Image (cartoon, rainbow, N blue to C red; front, side, top):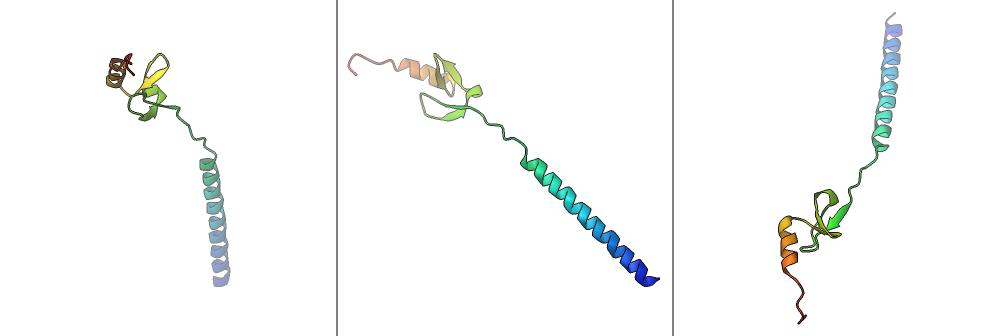
Length: 82
């Protein structure tokens, strides 16, 4: 009777290990299949900082990281001497 109980316990333990392995494999496969969302980035025309396009200030197709850099870039108008 004792040997049968030990063998039955080992069988249950083996089944548990197999099921646990299969559940972990499925979880790993699901995590690997998730898509990575990319964000389009732009460069500030004044300082060169790269930032998400959604956070940039845009004027006439030119992007800036802040209103201050937009103003600074507008105040640097090219002169006839350059």
